[in-house]
Length: 167
Ligand code: GDP
Ligand code: MG
Image 1 (cartoon, rainbow, N blue to C red):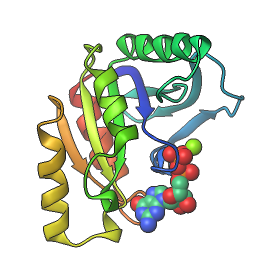
Image 2: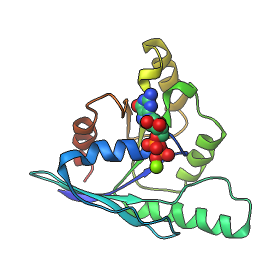
Image 3: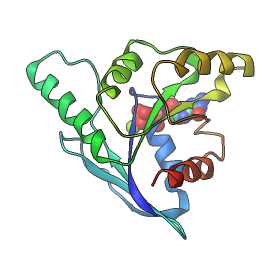
């Protein structure tokens, strides 16, 4: 199985941390070219029965200029060209903030399955996590909702397994 995956989310939600975790020892290629309006390959992760290409998508945030508007359109459009979108949010914010809601609004133009990855669950209690899931679950038709802690969990196999089901 093989396919393309984009990781999106506000700055600091843990996108790079998660990608490093997933790549781990399975890494084949990792690239750190500066962001442009075009998608760039960030990592190719290869296992026995799969190959997943992680694409770096430019940040999606409310544009202030016409050029910014264009760049958001390009970024959002590119999400239609991958097999799965991983949308990362932060657990300890307890509910979607304006930046998250803006991304959710944009995702409504996208046909690709979206996994909601609720990261940094090490910072909150179990009952709070249930509330966070509740706050998000009706904001979009997520294909999966996966709570993780990219810094402390062994979350990579779980995520890879779910990705493989959608390739
Ligand atoms: P990015 O901007 O989305 O790429 O975010 P980074 O991966 O650079 O992470 C931003 C900060 O959040 C870093 O200081 C990470 O160490 C921290 N971070 C990432 N994941 C977790 C997590 O699961 N728990 C905690 N407590 N911190 C995390
Ligand atoms: Mg980053």
